[in-house]
Image (cartoon, rainbow, N blue to C red; front, side, top):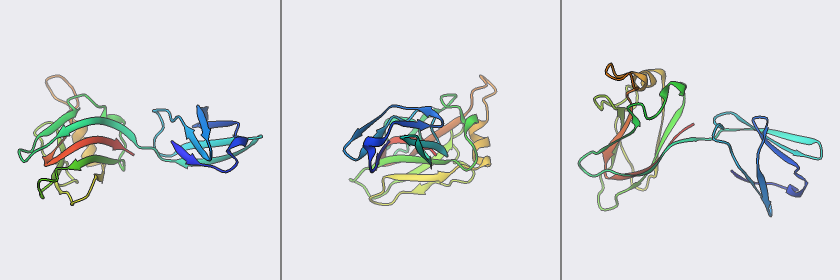
Amino acid sequence: MIVEVANGELLTEVKINGVTVTHTLEGNQLKIQVPATAGANTSLELISSGVSATYTVSFAKVIWTGSFVTTSAWEGNQDLGWGNYDWSSVQPGTIITIYYTLNQAVTDWQLKLGCANGWAELPTIPSQSLEAGSTKFSATLNEEDLEVLRRRSPDDNKMYGLVVSGCNFTMTKVTLK
């Protein structure tokens, strides 16, 4: 995390959720190493000369990165399905964001968030047409969506989880916040 600060040279300690973290100062930019456990409503405390200021910050948790190309054939990425991600820790109201680049050779881009078992779209998040120039799609997961993602296969008891499918874009990252 990078934030601009005034009088950064007076800073003696940085804490995230009460734990001291590594930080560096370059000019007026404070670079803070954020632990992977940071998420929504994280406490950030800046301490200097015995005085502290505490802020609440929400960090997105990256749950997938890579390069997954979809074409007009509607490929689906199952990396967050079949037990590869633990959806039981996700709370209703969490925002899922899919980051992508659009295939500029076409003008029809679509995205669907679905269950890896049967690939049906999530109950409250219909398939989306993506807008020209867009780089991400966000939706709020509610309890009904999470119940679908948490269902388990009777064969191996793995969570069915998420499949991201669509056409004419390259998925690069998925976050939860």
